[in-house]
Image (cartoon, rainbow, N blue to C red; front, side, top):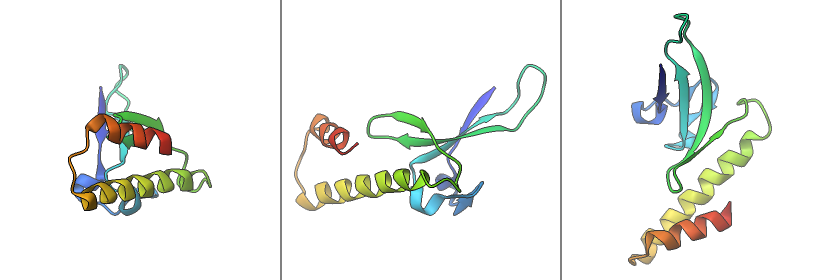
Amino acid sequence: MLGLFSPFRHEIPNYLGYDILRFRNHIRFLEVVVNREGEQNGICPLYFDGLTNTFEELPKPTDSQIEKYYSKVKQLNLLITKIKKQNKQIKYSKIIKIWKNIL
C-alpha cells in the first residue's frame, strides 16, 4: 500500500531534511505504508508540479542539485504573482505553455 504525504498542508517547516517552507506545496513524499511482507517506511521524496500535474524524484537534501528545484518553485511563484497582478483572464493552456518554456 502506498501513500502520498504533503508536509506543507500540515504546516511542517522541515521534513526529512527538506526545507518545506521553500518548496511550499511543490513537494510530496511517496511512502510505502505496507508491502507484501508487512515491512514499512520506504520513502521517496518527489517534486510536484501541480500546473502540469507531474512528479519528479528529488535528490537528497544535501545534494547541490536540490537548488535546481528551489529555483523552479521560485520561478513558478513569480509567474503566478505576475498573472495575478495583471488581473486578466488568461487561458489555462497559455499558462501551461509559458511554464513549459520556463522548464
